[in-house]
Image 1 (spheres, rainbow, N blue to C red):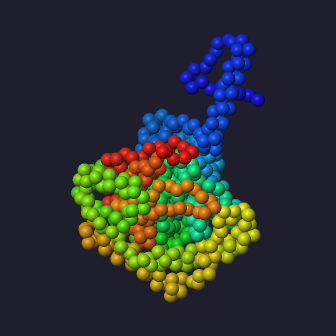
Image 2: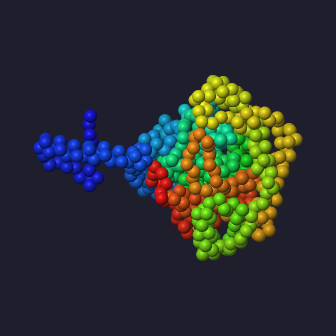
Length: 551
């Protein structure tokens, strides 16, 4: 057995010492090592990870581009750097488990982009930048698109999702695919966010025993842990903003129709959208610019033609001055320390010139949640069956019914902790021509949009509404499922309106996000306000991969 001793002083001991003295020193060190490990094991169950600060930790897209422009960095070097961090942090060390699959062609892609940069210059701000894609998004390469389900294991897409085409065109390096809640967290009534049968459990980088929330858990953890520059997530209700909040990053859930859904495994077409996840508002805006666009295969993106504003021009550090911001206090009250952070944020915004209008609650009837759920069940069955018609023919899964049967036959592997109640409930629904579905869709959209967010913003002449994104990350409980304390995503998601979350502080070392909510296609206004808030606060601190929360 070899024992390697690393001297943290930075030097290497070269003095000749007698064999006996060496033996005594090694014995003492080895004994101390064992005793130290025993002490740590008693306290935490295993030794604490020691993660060194990386050379490019917290770098922004513009900083990377500047380094590349000056010849100090290549895309190949940056890609290798992130691959090394993934190996050290995601697959070893704290075993963050945010990455479900690495793109074996990543370095080759980076090499070509480096050559192109020298010959023609960069295509965009993402040229040569390694990014991550959620594992429910099609990529025409050797990586699988599975939504984390073993039923789709081996599914290789025949073409890129529309947003992936745009990212490749922009010169991004698709570094890999991120882990997620299986079927984007639409499988069981007591699922654990961040767990899927293919990828296992994603851990929260701020406290490894805590949940990352879902379903874009891997994308959030990878960005927060500095395993990539930025990442793509998807949201039906909260799955971009909630994991972003719990991992201390920025998440932008855009208006429905801003980004194409073609090539993304669906839950519900009336709410689904891709979103950008980054460590800064600026990077999130850059990514949003590049994934936005009209797609003839996704009719809802026709609205993009008249609503494309280009979002980087809204990055104004004085963006809070004169902004009329409402406070939706009906989303407060689930945690006193979260409320305290919100009050501090309100004071900061006032100091930056914002006009704060109190008690501008977004009101919806008590049956709102039931109507949303009804819509999701109907659309999941219909939309998923359409998607499955075009998957890799060698995958013998053609319908939701096939998935349910596959899960039953492979119960020990697929359902060791929770079952598939939601899949069964969706399968029992009829078609989208059912009156029950049509009525639920119409009423829920009206409640969330015109009678909800729009009515509140019109009444008080608001530019944005703020609320806590959600509470502190809960301890992961694979047996009983999630312990979600509260949040503000549902009305915005059903309405199909934009939603941005930005770090707002910490509760026992766990990140808390503040949400900025606006009218349909008001991304520019929200980015302006969120950017100014971020610049005034600078709350984000990189995670230290602790075993448990601070006291």
